[in-house]
Length: 369
Image (cartoon, rainbow, N blue to C red; front, side, top):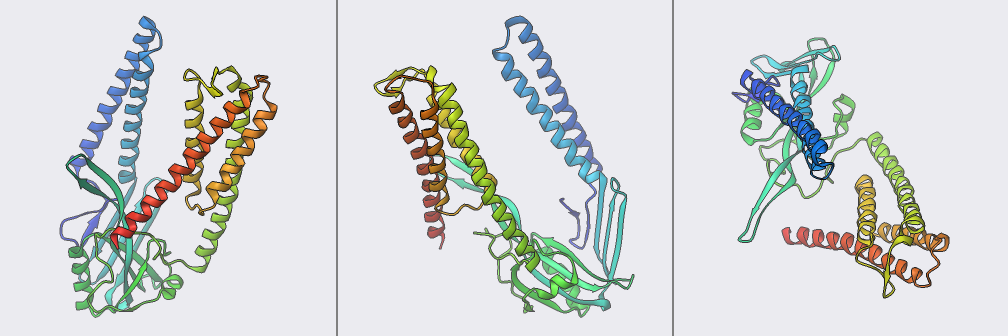
């Protein structure tokens, strides 16, 4: 959630009236465009049948999706109110969730603050690349600063409150206030993105007294997210999640292999074979795309892939193809050769693309060092 500020000391999540009006206007425009496209779809179906009406229908769905996304984004700002203030007497945090009927009002006086800890956080930014031949935009993680404030509130509870700064200007303004009030400031080279806001967790973070210089540059590109501080409980949870993800990856790859059996038994026999290969009029290229995209989706879901897993998974898929050949009702003697050719193309293309992307990324990282 984006916070609004004029002086870098007082922040609010509430949008100005003109921004709310713009959101409502956009939602209305997207809705009208979506409804218009659906009307045109109905007219097109009645006059000429499907054909062009499918495209009109998809455009209508796209505009309805944009209106829904804009509405949900606006509701987020209307349903939740957050106000943060670094004032003369202390740090004030107020949050009200209208939908869940939850309200928090925490005030930490400066004299009750144990210390302030500065670490890293991340946000997504756009990187523009200009060249003679083409321009490109890439989403990358950027380093920003995150502050954890530990102290005793006016309700006599030990609290930890956090706030992220995307500019040095806003961070320095806060630090100047804390210095003037005599609050101890510490620094860590760890990323605090996943750190829970509780006193037990913040005490475990390796820290040293802040001397005025950060170990990172705010706004710089982060090459990886390996500097994240995690508690033992969080580490155990992530390890367990990775194990489950790997098991699920094998299950999903097995489903892709089963899909090969189904295609080879019920779809491939209808294809023409020319010179021991499926003809150009066959659906071979659609089957190739389906296989490659399906396995790519499996890997997107798994996220962390070990170097040998693509080879293992292609063996599983190849076993599925062999089973499909054995079970297929096609009695043509050259059918097996045609399917084997499909298998070589599917497996070879996937491994070439996967390892090619990995090697390219490795060379890119090497070039930055």
